[in-house]
Image (cartoon, rainbow, N blue to C red; front, top):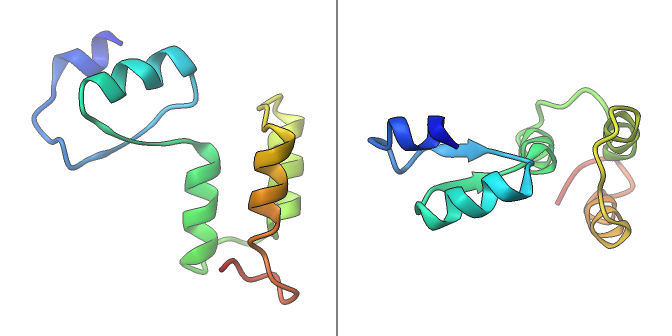
Length: 86
């Protein structure tokens, strides 16, 4: 959290944090946030991902990055039958 405090000159920057405590602190500081899942969704929407969302979710599981079952269903439901994200 010290790093967040050091330079707060560009508030339009998007900060990627997965740690709950750090996210709460960054929100209080008024920073825009995303997490790993948000980055993956953005890559898919831009057509820059090489795998489907199911494969991405499996990689997150392998890395012990927890995704709640409800969020997983919601995110995986964004992918259409062609593998494109709406």
